[in-house]
Image (cartoon, rainbow, N blue to C red; front, side):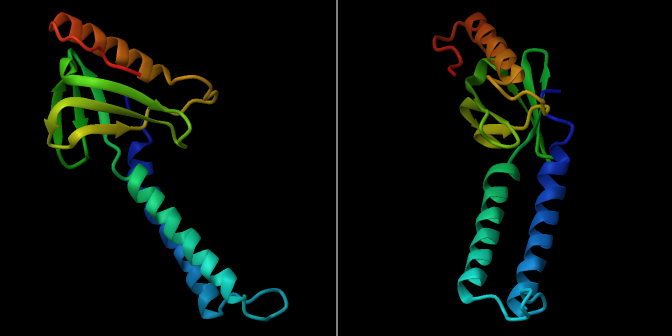
Amino acid sequence: MLSSRLTFLYKFVLPVLWNAMFGLGVFAILAGVLPSRSGAPPPPEAKAFLVIVWAVGAAVWFLTIIPIKQVWLVGDGLRISSFRREISVPLADCVEVRSHRWNNPELVSVTFRRETAFGPGVRFMPPLRYWPWGEHPVAIELRERVDTARQAAGLVAAARR
């Protein structure tokens, strides 16, 4: 398995918990349930700031983490699951493997030569690591396997970084 075992948690559980808890906190502040230490309601700028932070946080979850897939390396192909649907893609059909090391959690994206049921590419969360300097070893290994498969298939451009 190339994906982290925490994929389900990050994809389904944490976004719901974060949005619900942060949303309840924002709602409590907006409704005046949680006044400041002085007892006065927070200023309108603070309320607007909290709503913006909540909206941006939700957008980040929905745009970066929720679309991730679970990915396995099976023989000369990838098995990709959205937890509802599963597809297989030959390694020779992979065009690019990129590591997104500055994301938290780290993500790896794979772009395909042709459109798949999940679109032109997928992102997955490799196993978490304690020392995130440099490219994730899963991305390096997958790129090497893709290069080998593409060369064996006689395809010109190898998977780029």
